[in-house]
Image (cartoon, rainbow, N blue to C red):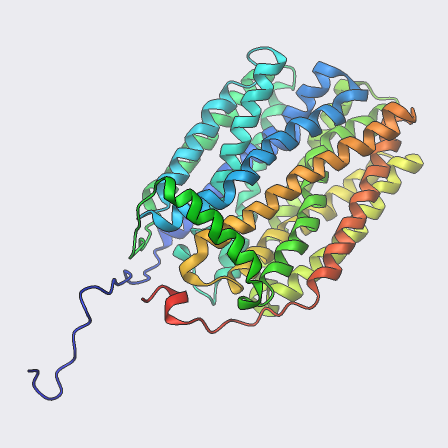
Length: 448
């Protein structure tokens, strides 16, 4: 018997989460990883690998070839995203998954351009798959370094500081030239690894209070759960609609980022510059985009906390509509190269807003106990868009440049306008969604 007034102890079978103590060093280390992985995304995906492909296959085939290689890598991560999310929800910690994916990415990045075309293409596919998987694990750690009140600000700081990593990637090419791409890829790999280490050491997870075995049965269960979650979208208002809308805007935005360097080179060459001069201009234009992306990350993070992720994302998508329209006209009409600097500056500001708004938006729609699984879906639709985007780009540029014999910049300009239509469609899809905080049950919060 308990004496009157004595608190009833909780059952031993009910697990408890560790207190949510957020240390400054944990926040700083989480933000630093954003900087580290941006070195890879800018240096490899957006800049030097596409230029390496152009060196290997020529200007007329570069867009199609690069699009196919990128689509293959994204198809793989698309298939594995839900499984990876389920694994991290079952595991005691998510950090080991982030460490493993980062290490694989680093190793295969260092191998780029050191062998033949097909070996390098395979290395890129593996590195990109590992990088994309790491993003999924990293995003799911945001609740560990933030609260509901400051999540937009912390995410925005990560985006803003993260883009500083692009200075390293672009700056290396400016300092040593783009001729020695094996050296550039190795330098990027080393920087990625070194700047990731603080995140591995200092981000403390509360841990999973109910870890479960990871085995073959998990594959069947996670697949069934993913299908069930999509079918039962009504249980989580706005979730499925948000994921569908995200397919379209990430499709367009990620594609235009990945081809910006090729687009710049073609516009520059059409004005009378050499290919080497065009590659130099591509670096400077991307540098201007980075500068404004840093500022944009902080601004949009503040906007997200003040006005909510829904309104902020709406502002961002309207900005992207104007950017895509202007960028397409530059190639089609043949406007001066300086116009691309305006596009790059505006795109940089808008780019920070996408990630500063849509990560907190996703968390508003996600039960806390299923963050890993739902971020698997979040990542899955992003990867799906990263498959379809390069395929659409490859098809449009093949028809316009190789079949219709248009100038490369004209065919690319038409491709940009096709991507504009996808941003407009995403904006329409997202409008009915509410971003008001949800009231979750104890089970959905993971309290039992």
